Structures are given as C-alpha cells and as structure tokens.
Length: 479
Image (cartoon, rainbow, N blue to C red; front, side, top):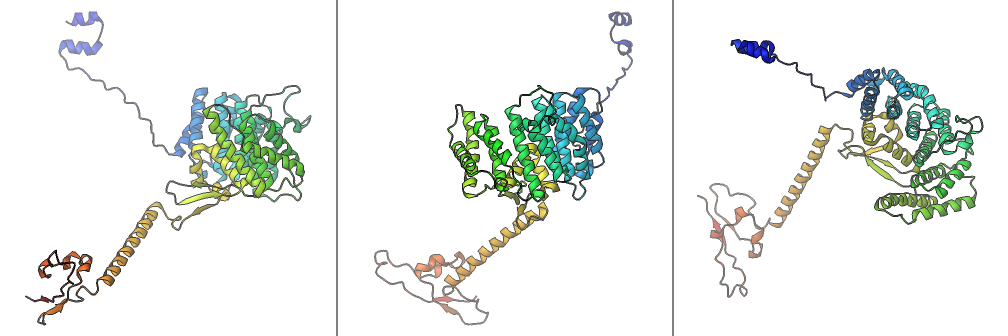
C-alpha cells in the first residue's frame, strides 16, 4: 500500500499518513485580509499619496482616480493642509511622465485640491501655493499642447485653481489672458507672446473652444465680483470676437458659450462703447438663434431645445434687462435653497456645477468658499440639526391638529347649547325637566345623548308631513 501510494507520486506526507492509518495534518490556508470599504476620506487620501510614488503607471493612474473621487466628495481643508505640497508634486510628476488619462486626472486633482483649500476660512495660503506651483504647467498646456484632451482638462483646472487661490486681480487677469491668447484668439498673443513654434499651428476642437470661452467668462465674473472695475473699462474688442463666434461658428456649444459671455459683459457694463449698429446686429443674431429651426435627429433636437431656451433668455435680457433666475436645493432635506438672479452668478453656478459633477452638492454644503460666493436662503429651522428639524416639523403639525380640534369643539357647543344639559343634577335634588331638541336637529346630537326609548313615538307615516312635532317633557329620574 505504501509502495503503491509512493509509486503514484501524489500526496507526500499526507498520503503516507492516510496509508499508514495515522491522523492527517490539516493545514489551514492563510486568510487574505479583507480590504476595508468604509475608509474615511482622510485615509483614502493617504493611501493614494503612497500609491502615487509607485513606478507602475497603471497603479498611479488608479490612485489618481481615487484621489479625485475623494476630493470631489469634499475632504475638509484641515485634513489636507499638511499634505497638499506632496499631492501637487506628484500631480506635476504625472503631468510630465504619465499617460494622457493620468495627466487629465492630475489636472482635475489640482483644481479640486485648490477648491478644497480655498474653503479653509481665513487661511487660504494652501490654495495660493497650489496655484503658484501649478500655474506654469497649466498655462503651458493651454497655450502650446496639441493634445486637446489635455487642453480641456488644463483649461478647467486653471480656471478653478485661479478662482480658489488668486491673490489679486492681476493673477485672475493673467489666467484670463492665457486662456484667451492660447485658445480663443491666438493672434492676440503677438509675435513673442505665443508658445507655439513658428509655423506650428494646432487645430482647436469645438469642445476646447467652448470650454475656453466658458472659463474666460467665468473668471471675468469672478474678477468683477471681487474687485472694483476701473473707470471706463471696456471689452469692446473681445465682444466683437465673441459676436463673430456667435454668428459664424457651426458648433452650438461654442454659440451658447459666446452668447452667455456677451450677456455677462453687457451686465457688467463692459459694452458701453460698442457701436449701436453693432449691438443691433448682435440682437438680431440672438433673436434668430432663439427661433432657429432644429436639425435632423432626435438627439440633435434635444440639444437644440436647450440652446433656444438660453438664447431666448439672452434676448429678453438684451431687450428688457431682465436676467434669468435659477434655484438649486442645497440638500435632500429641502430646508434651504440657493437662488441666483444675475448672469454673473448664473455663469459661476453653471461652471462649478459642470466642473464638480456629482460632487457639487457636497462642496455646496460643506465648503465655506461656496457660502462666500453664493447666498443660500433657508427657513426658520435652517440652523438646527436634522433631529431638531424633524422635531420642529412634528411640533408644528401637532399644534395645527390641536387648533383644528378646538375649533370643532367650539362650533359644536355653539350649535347644540340649547339641546344639551349644561350640568349634571346633583344627588338629592328634584328631577330635571328638559324639552328635547327639535326633530330636525337630532342628527346634530352626539351618540351618547341619543336615547330612543325616551323620545316620543314617531307620528304615522301618512300624517307626518301634516302635523307639527309633539314637544313632550322628558323626565330624568335619579336612581
């Protein structure tokens, strides 16, 4: 038996013990450690920082994606205040050495990191440091990169990082100039201002152009929202180019972005020196786009409907000065609402909503920078915690129920005060004689007072309509 087991060559010591009758040894395999799924954002950020030092590109890319997801869900500024320098340095490494997707995620991580640090209250030094370190790489990509996917990510990252970390209107205008000269109007950079080599032109996609116009308009509203404009400041030349994009460009996204930018310039009184005939031509173009027939295809019609609505709002604003309004619920409890009533605030809200995506409401609720930018209106219980809010709603409902009950009881007593005894007879007193209520009011008496055996017998059916009701006394005796 032992030779036969060894000859088959399987089993080793386990088979030898089975053959000789000895008790086998059960070896328990090592149990793999379960990956934690309930990690707090701070732990996610620390784990991602460690993984960003790996040499394998796929590992860094996955870590960068997790980092962006954690920052979108809003990590408090205090939790990343001592880590942002490392995060920015690893993002810059990914911009230089990583794949296109890793670089796009790095641009996004820089923008949301600056947005998180910019909400640190009075201490916004972290956001300023992020902008100072990342601006050269962001501006170079916007102005000189031929990869439009990177240009798109860099435009948004530059706009958001400037919004959160600017240290003066000159830094906002620096970013605006980089976007305008790099993408919207490269000819405005001049011979020595462009980073492209001589004869090295690039093809700007409509998506990149629309993103650049939106980002430039967003920063324009920010600089005029935070700083006083110079006397006589004008955007005449830029409005002329935006009007040309509005009239000539085939892409609807570019048209919408240009129209919203023009509306913002008009609202900020930057079109005061534009010629009247130019404004009339602009109004005619907007009016046509507000009623332009849609193209072929269901998807094309859906996109076109949104475009027509926007240009209808721009047309109303240019004619009557009436700006559109938009309201956003700040939480699922529906206790407060963010409402904007100007084009400048609407552009800021739309840009940040598009940039943050699903993370917008988290930042709106927890990032103080959003509270400084937008006004949120709440009801009388807005400042209370969730449990107190539920209790307040229940108390109000209970109060209303009690008031309705008191009203019903008061009406009941007023209607039946002549058909009900006002008090119970005391013991040892004489019997109380009461007349019953009229027959027409019996349905108003409560069930406890309806005593059929004490009521007079009903009149015959044949003569009930001819005879008046008999008023007979009812004798209440005490037992």
